[in-house]
Amino acid sequence: MRLRLPRPRSLAGQLFAMQVVLVAAIVAGCAVFAYVTDRAQAEETARRQSAATALSVAESPTVAAAARSADPTALLQPYAESVRHRTGVAFVVIMAPDGTRWTHPEPGQIGHTYLGHIEEAARGGTLSETHQGVLGPSVRTITPVRDHGRVVALVSAGITIDTISEQVREQVTALLGMAGAALALGGAGTYVINARLRRHTHGMNAAELSRMHDYHEAALHAVSEGLVMLDGQRRIALINDGARQLLSLDAEVVGTPATELGLPLPLTGALLASEPRVDEPHLTADRVLVVNTRPVVGGERRGTVVTLRDRTELQALSGELSSERGFTQALRAQAHEAANRLHTVVSLIELGRVDEAVDFATAELELAQALTDRVVDAVGEPVLAALLLGKAAQANERGVELVLTEDSRIDDGLLPPEIPSRDLVTILGNLIDNAVEAASAAPGGAGGAAGQGGGGKQGEPRDAAGAGVQGGSDDTGAQGGSGGRPRVTVTARACGGELLIRVGDSGRGIPEEDRDAVFERGWSTQGSGRGLGLALVRQAAARASGTVRLGGSPDGGAEFTVRLPLDRRTRTAATEVTA
Image 1 (cartoon, rainbow, N blue to C red):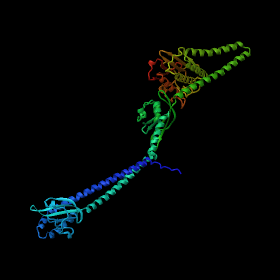
Image 2 (image 1 turned 180 degrees about the vertical axis):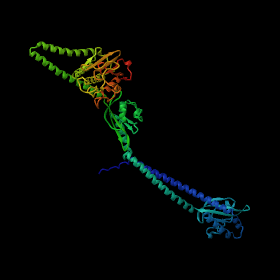
Image 3 (image 1 turned 90 degrees about the vertical axis):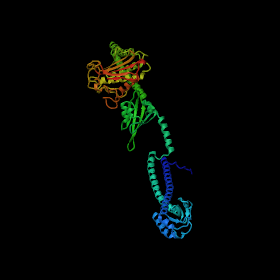
Image 4 (image 1 turned 180 degrees about the horizontal axis):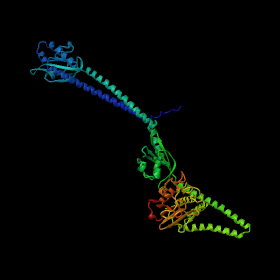
């Protein structure tokens, strides 16, 4: 049989036992102190009472006159007993200067010698002492009776120790009652407080609480996800290293209200929300975060637990994967079209119409090669060239013409390492996707959807640019759309120490009142769950210290202009967004 050691008492139980012992010790100490004090005070009171009685009797003319008489006892005994009863002392003894008693509460003691010290009184002084007498130990005072300056008698008045003890016992009984009540009240209060403490500590002992704290600290700093805990006043109660890194906060942020952290307004709103948020994407200056919040509720709102996951790399990779998927679909469509054209050429040859077959094949080759030559000649950056070719094929599938302006020029190797290809794909790819969807959705376009699409990284939900406005902006002065085939115009140029990317469309444009909101996460006319693409464009431009500008396109739709500085010395930390 295995011996089972008893579980250590809970922290609340330990505190309860300690507090009960402490209260009991304090009450007992107070009781002992009060008893000793009361005893001393009782003896002092008895001494004063006996002294007052003795002095009062000694100053009485009756006593001096009786002392000169032939039988002092006959005159003084009734008087002494009367004084004793009135004053409450145990005895009043009047004696001759040699100590022979003239009076005594016990008449049999009259005539005997007084038990006590009388030398001081016989010399004319007054003496108070505690002495063993006929009635037992007593506190007494002896004083002389003077007649014309001569000591003719002595008076002793006293109170027995038993009488004093009886008084002290009565006081101690009352004191013990009060002490017991105080102990019971203190114990009850301690029990109530520790019951509440037991609920808060869940019955754990000090070792378990310490171990839990150690595990809590280790887990908090070990997880790579961000963890933020807000108290009931929406202040930072706890934050781990991952959250500080994701939100770019310092170590002194604990205790700061969430509204004073300098976070984007949508993210701040998510932290302050009373309802839970599940896998909600939010953008900071340089990151894409997935936010989950859950209120801590226990009878009342106690705070909020927030988890943060960094989706920046995943967002970039998914965008690249979506671009590759788009290229694959475009190649599949082109292969299908090439097969159709090949069948057409073969059929013309079989029909004996060789000249027509040659003309048809030559025209198709020239058209495809012209677009490739135009892009490759203008854009030496291979990633951007491949992106433009793929987007051109995708746009053509949707009946939209993608035009690269004549002044576009980006030589290979010109872009600095501070502008990664991934950010360029994010910017140009999202803007072209937006423009293609807007152009195809406009009246007379190839699509049927309303509003401008806004691609979230390629393959992500698309932003919408609003509907109902035709015509150009103050920047271009253009009026209306192209009136022909839907078109997207792209300018990509590196000159003057900056990279210029401009994408315009022939769609219906963006209403003036919405131009300040298009870059916010979630803004879209295509329904909920969309509206991340333009926010990602602004974020990528901000990482490169660039600017994003929204205006009107000469073709009648919207035109986005991105400027990224190529010279490191001209880079700034701010991103300017104007409408």
